[in-house]
Image (cartoon, rainbow, N blue to C red; front, side, top):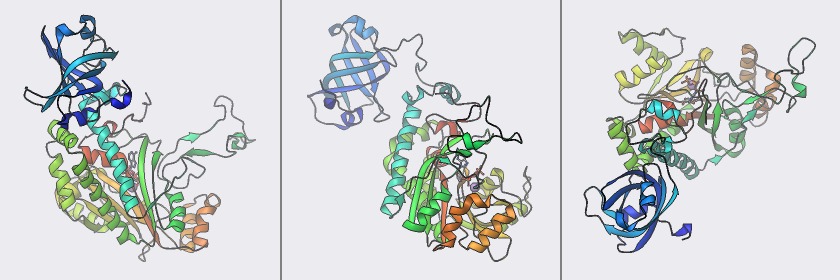
Length: 465
Ligand code: ATP
Ligand code: MN
């Protein structure tokens, strides 16, 4: 039979086209029964649900059925019938079973359920076959699609910014070097430093930490663009919210000020949550029941609330009046830490919070300066359980102000000639933000470790698979 005649489990489960022969293919989750009848729960990843295969044991070769065990991959031809048993509407009465690949019960690691998430990280090559990771990967797909759908519907163009970058001025984090030089014996300058002229690009290059600077070039021509791609940070931060390789969504818009930027971020985040609730409900219900009983409540509450908008100065004031003892300082000028962010969101406002007007000395050079000379038009969106989920700003469009700030910070001004050109020629007010895709996935799925919302996590001392 050709592959086209395969029915997906998801479709078979809702079909009422009974008494017809269909073919399903997938991996055996469990098998139970006795000498005369076998019940096989089959899953092909199209849904969290399994389809029940009923096989009349004497009608099949003994050697074949012996190998139909948890993890084995099979193809089943049979008749779709309303189920007599509880727990499913339909089942398949098997006429023939083909074995694609057995899975030795003595060594297949995913016997039955209830493995810890830590253990599953060690077998990331097989964990997509669990209910949990099947659900997460389907949701991840749906969210990726929803992101493109949202921007497409709103007239944004998808811009592909480079992954290998020749600029290290963004300052968003430590970078991974990209080089073809011999690490044992690199060419050296007279003063002993590495001579990058002989390197592949003839200069020092790194993996990008953000597509923003190039995103701005796109916005100052196409008006509204977004990027959605991998970003890399070589920070040694072993936390449940940081990856060394993560995906970021970065919209950048000409003619937007900081208020427009906040409106967009709030609308976009709510759209994604609504999309998940509408399109991933079975998977979300599973995660709600297994890991986080508040998940669905929290998702529903976020779409109904108006995000609280406060300034950094107001945030500091609230923290200082809270009577709480925080580990990190809360004096004006200190950066907000995760403990502060979560206090504001979870204890004080009990809803998402957008903070603006940060001190310029803790934010990046490109952010638009306020008239007070001390603060910039930055914005961070803080979410329950996550803390910072979005970081963005209105950008400084004034060449003189931007140039002065670059000099003040001692940044490599010559390397930014192309960036400064946009302010030199037809500059425009503009703004944008970055949403960490895996932070959003943490929020949507209710998982607590970022290593569990990406197929193959990259973290310090871990690049397996
Ligand atoms: P944090 O303070 O949480 O380390 P950041 O201020 O360094 O984050 P930005 O440079 O503003 O983050 O990046 C934009 C967004 O990218 C963040 O709001 C967050 O959602 C996400 N993000 C940043 N660093 C990481 C990381 N290491 N792993 C996963 N997501 C990240
Ligand atoms: Mn940030």
